[in-house]
Amino acid sequence: MRSKQLSAKRKLLSITLVAILVLSLCLMVVSSAAAQTDQAASKLAAANLAVGQAFNGVLGAEKAGANVTGLLVQLNVAEGFLAQAENSYRTGDSSAAAAQADSVLPVAQQITAAAQNAKQAAVASARNGFWETIAFTAVGLAAFVIALLFAWSRVRRNYIKNLLKAKPEVVNR
Amino acid sequence: MKLESYKFIFVAVGLIGVLLIASPAIAGAIHLPGGDAFSELYLLGPGQMAENYPSNIAVGANYSVYVNVGNHLGSSVYYVVYVKLANATDQLPNTSLGTPSPLLPLYEYRFSLPDGASQQSLVSFSVSSGAIQGSNSQISTLQINSQAFNVEKSAVWNSNSSKFAYQLFFELWLYNETTGSLEFNDRYVSLQLNLTRTQ
Image (cartoon, rainbow over all chains, first blue to last red):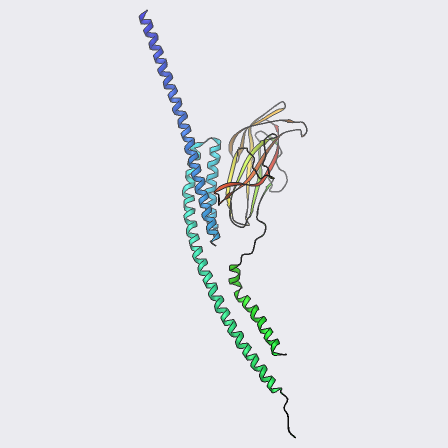
């Protein structure tokens, strides 16, 4: 009788242990999946931010007068990776989404740096171009005004000369 | 001719000359307003013409359309096209209020375009899993550009139009560099689809 009770208790204990083990395993799997999803979401947010900053950099360079054709090609690559990551995330493939989001960052950072250099070069070039234009305009205007005044003095002198020649003279007879 | 007349000619020539010589500097300082700024969005059929758009669709068959976006906003723009699937009761974008559809996007693609440029993108899709039972139909999985999306969208038979009406629509969003976020551009194009048969 007592041995039967003991064996029943042992059984109950082992079932409880197995149940706890299974439950904890399930919790671990669920929490690991949730952590993976959270990680993918945060990587996507970082990739979105990086691509936004890269675009702002390219736009700034373009507004400064830089040729951004090459930068836009690179930007399209980063945006393509980001769209793939977002699509993978929507299909529930968090690990692929995280990997694709990771691949966006180096490209986006490279674009941001290149855009900054292009902007600086464009600003310097625009400044030089501005002063060159001002200098050429000033020299051109000065030369034109001097030429015009010279021409005017010649015309006036000739006019007066012709006027004096044409003056009627009184002749005594 | 009087001297005053010569003077007048010299002053006129002088003013015209000054304007001509200073025109590069003036052009750099004055910025004339541009024309209307807008983005264009339109769909073309599989033959890149405005015809043969997919309408009656069957489960397992492949369909394709070309989505075209043009940039006339005066500078480079970062665009996002969201692809969404709606049934007859789902809310579509409201162009008079400028609000997008509240439906979650299934698929997206992104690109940047310089001013004056346009981009044509091929979007192929197929219903990889769907069912028709009496007056009810359901699209369970939609494949867009080889990626499968779980949609679980149902439609009831519309006796007026004689179809199980679905809409695959494309919303145009663009990146606002000031706010650093994507904004709906108040433009969308849609494909009216009718699920006709399953395998």
